[in-house]
Image (cartoon, rainbow, N blue to C red; front, side, top):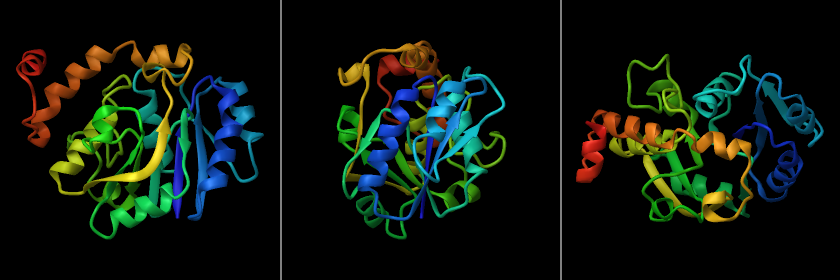
Length: 237
């Protein structure tokens, strides 16, 4: 069974279409949990109206730095199935995304990157923007590189928004627990790919991209990442 976790902010119009999409193509038993911000009442109402059995989890903070990672980490304690999927409200699941990802995972891999059909590095299998994650992997090892993270968390909360998916993927690669499911397609719509209109939530997420990149590069030694370019090494210094 898969717990689909969806952090959201200020996009009530996306809730019902996403739930309809999930229900239409997901054949493995699953739950859908949206993670809403305190005070984002229109979003929460849209989630509650989106379908029977859909959960609207509201976190006790207003959206700020680290919001996506914090929402995923908080949602982990609210679900208990074998697998969780790190989702968003600007994605579209295609048929067999779930069965293909689970088949690729087998009993060997714990972080399964789906194909977002957008980011070139994702399409090459270097990391995943939206991953299927074995719950036991998080509770036993944690998804981040730092032993100083508070408990076993999925994502490092020190980033403003960007690179949390890259750290999750690279750490799993270092541990031999990562695999790319090329034919498990979960399309990512984003203004960078000209597949979604710009809005305040996208602008918030990109505001501190360079700072997030520098933090990621400064942490790369924690998982023995050696693929840095000269310019990236200088940035990380």
